[in-house]
Image (tube, rainbow over all chains, first blue to last red; front, side, top):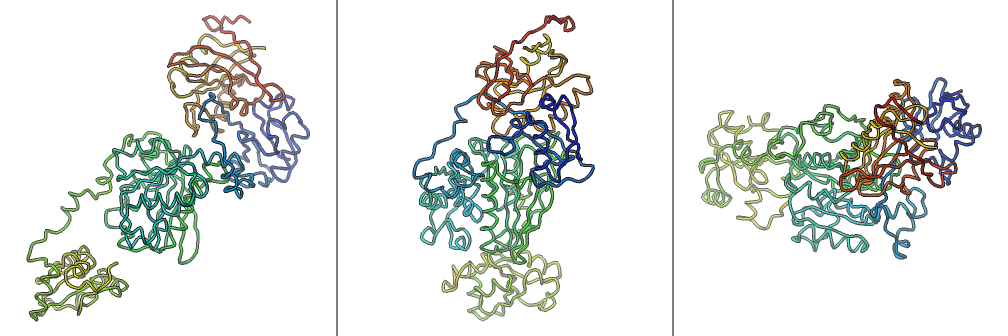
Length: 482
Length: 145
């Protein structure tokens, strides 16, 4: 026997009892027995199609069966089942009238329409929905394409970048002929071709604390496809402040993450990471690389959660942090809780307006300038100057501090390869009196290598400004760039 | 059939509606024998936009029942406001209504409370019946039925 707690409005149907005992191996059986004995309950618990009404919540002890096995949730001795109303209502409004589907749309979405979880009503909800994609890059590409294909009525995209050859390995919304075009123009063309019923709004600006609240206001869900910490914190905080769910995703090398943040009851990104990592600790995809198909998986998970949220279908990725490892082909899931002390979504928030996120993440431009070693002419040289020295036969040792796979793509003639990470153990291979030139892709890592060698007593160390890219521009245009 | 509000409860519901404007407010009505003695404010947690929707979450419902039990009162119903809309239940109200409760609606036009009505779900869920609302004169304890 299982004890069932009856809420006040239903007690007139259970002979005024506030608790009754029933048999049942699972919730479905238990409720069937309950509504057989107390027939007056049935129409209030079940809709005409035989499904539990959306505002009827069934709890086993303290857990909502939506997050267990729904009506299949098994019952064991000692369980207490509670029927708990959600009370809802509201003024009639023009906005609740969902748009009708045209004949063409009914054909296009027929595979959706025949599933009860979507149906005509769900498809009309999708048509009414407005989703804002932050970025038309690796994550934004597949996400926006599937949102458009699924019939999300309005898709906004914020981006200010131009399509580059190095984007095409993963940013599938753009094609080879689009290289050099604005990403927004390219994305709009592609989405329009995919589904002309979808309205595309484009915002050619960098998301900032000044424009975020204005840009988010007309949208229902924000899809975060950003690739850096300042914008990620900005998107999260703006979502919390405007009450918009944040379909979050991020990628690095072979690993991706996804979750649904900033819903009313769920945690936000800051509940998980209150503070950003120190600048430079986590490399960007431009530095560390990214597996091209990875954003396909993660971006489509973000689109999936967005569509489910609009439909109100299934179990949302709220309070769950999904980690995907493409090399091992494994998904892991961490449980997340809303943090009552969270600085932005907690009970006493300290962040109540948008702040300076560049500064918050320690990457303000003035700080970069202060952190970088001052470069004087004696410390650095250009590729043209280096070429002239080599032509004169001067004994210069060029040390390439990139990774081996980068070295395979292009290199300076006669350079030796010591990746930056190996330098602390391999610097002993270098002659302290040699005339050294440190070189990487564009000059950042080699500046760090130069600092390191100086700290070890090397005196004749110069940095090649512009790196191998500068060499290709100024000296050897036959080599490929990456 | 009807519901009685004390003058304090009537004033509290109307004040809540004005404060929440342009958003909807909602709360529970606790009392005995058809007389509402306490208007218990609840957070409006809807994700569809509080201007035209309200939602009382299961946890808040539990708190409400507990509050009633502790005060020796019964849950008699819920109130909510219709900002810039008449005090008549919408189809949405009907679809989400629970039986045997009073649903009080206060219309708040341009920030000022106007008409306050109360409704009960018909036994077959097909519609609401409007019920009479009595407001007792203060002091609260001199209740005339």
